[in-house]
Length: 112
Image (tube, rainbow, N blue to C red; front, top):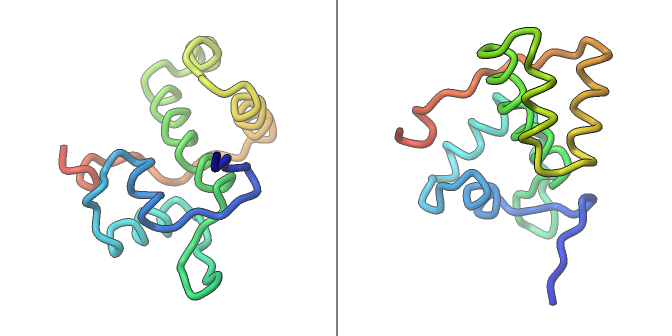
């Protein structure tokens, strides 16, 4: 059984899969990571990213969308829809510290 831990690193192909786009080319994955401030590391000859940093960046997309759509009520909605309690706790803590995400979700990355 292969269990992935939060402090693990994942490949760019795994990033594309987790974004829901298995056929996303590596340039697009790298652009998404750069725009979402996820650092790419070269480990064992492969380009990889921290799973934890990737998950935080991906969750930030949801938080930014909720803030935009629901304004002051976003935390109530987020509390109901967040699937990972640890991630939710981190995102709410980040918000309390007034760290605001700078990247907006755009559908062009996902061909929508």
